[in-house]
Amino acid sequence: MKIRVGLGYDVHVLEEGRDFFLGGIKLPATKGAVGHSDADVLIHAICDALLGAANLRDIGFHFANDDERWKGMDSKYFLKEVTSMLSEKGWHIQNVDCTIVLEQPKVNPFIDEMKKALAPLMNIPEDDVSIKATTSERLGFVGRQEGVNAYAVALISKA
Ligand SMILES: [Zn+2]
Image 1 (cartoon, helix red, strand yellow):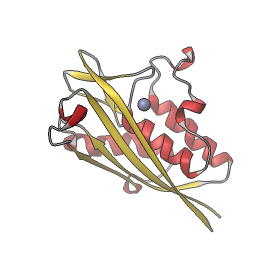
Image 2 (cartoon, rainbow, N blue to C red):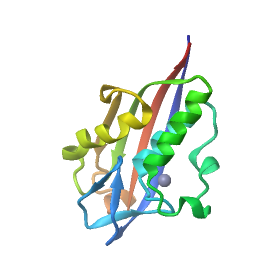
Image 3 (spheres, protein in one colour):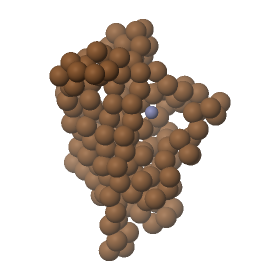
């Protein structure tokens, strides 16, 4: 069996009065992430981890941020598409582990809901999707609540 690991990282600006989509759900928050699509930083990091593991370039390569088709797009679509790209190459997703770095709001109460939203898009059990959250201890752009970032690693296998 062949196994490969992939790493994903993403960052988005936070702005007052925008909807905040994170991990496939809408968070109750006063600020939301800015982007060409729905700006779901966690899904974008996961997509890059999966694409990286399969050596299929990155999310911007497949879903360019100047392409009108992806304007305001629900990022859950991207994750579904990425899962299909991997599956076409014979790859199975084994597990995904992620960390969200965000000051406000606290995301721990929403992690189960995020796992429920994301696992089916990757055709894996919720138990194979780990989502962790931390703050930046008020340091830097995350600490000043100017942005949010996310890291993800993914393990994939081929028989
Ligand atoms: Zn992004």
